Length: 442
Image 1 (cartoon, rainbow, N blue to C red):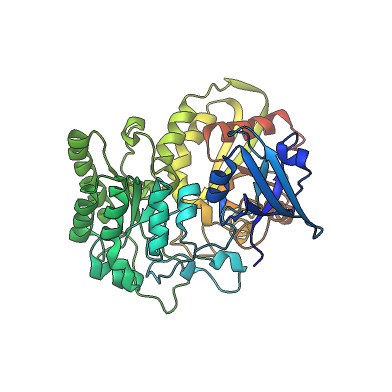
Image 2 (image 1 turned 45 degrees about the vertical axis):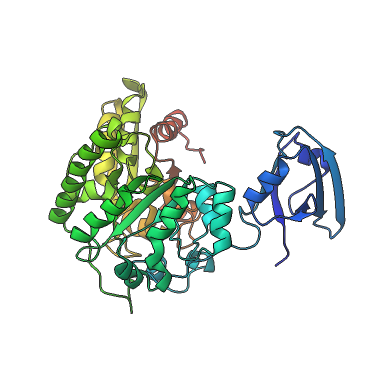
């Protein structure tokens, strides 16, 4: 692998453009030091006198020396956040979703990243099992905080068994060392019934709550697909089990709120949906620290939608379909009800069964093009159908099975339109359809 940071985009009017840098150029060194990731680049770029060694995409090697303000950006975006290869996972977790992917899909879908740099930069969860001593020292030295850690259990023997990695049992020691150095940590547990729930879950909570640097703990139910050949037998949570877990967590939240001023732990939205229990208030999620982990997304969407100023009626009637995963039906029902209160607007809600990964997978983000081909058959030609943008991958706009919304829409004779799962995003897309009856929105 050729070292360095490959430029993907140069901003107009930026310093990078003035230097003549273009997409495809590779920054090899800053101040004669090689750079392995975006963190190192940002630290080195903060100097006011900077030397760049750049391998141009035409093969020329060019050196730049410049004087700049310490906070003046280069104005270049890189293809990757790490430049020397992602640190991959060394575990073989019983519930790993990558191991439950169908065969013969593109290679990128089987990549198991477990990179502390991406945890700091992008909020991805890591297990800490592949950290070397120099990694830990760098985290402490450069104060790479917060980090996001998949703990699953603090029981050493059980964690080793779950992850099939002898280093997995050291998690509490590593967490305590990082916390003692001032590193803040957000943690999660993927909980499997009869394995790391019950008494094991309670002990894990107790252990993590005693580490000052651990700021939050999310509890997420295990997800299983139809592709579990040669994997350990696991099962999903039943609704009654989900209810008991949520009720136990809420009891601990009340104690934590009184003792530390924060609820500390939260069940993911999936648990509330499975348990058919009411969602907590907006305030109960505090700063929504675990939002990207599916904690509080439903409440945030509902409350933000409730603040929108919607018209009382339309000048011309319009019909729109919103399609989502089976689990998303309960999420979208209050929103659709409010939309249908607008005279002249008819919004229908359609749940799509996951025919690709299996019916036990109910979240919208894992629906594929083939799922929509099957689930949207029979709609009137020209129908406008909104689907969550989480169903397509950022960067290429394709479903996991490589179909695109445009290709699926063409086969069905409908317009399949992705929409951000936010109040503003949903209403903006609907407003665009209303304004443009000829349907030229992209």
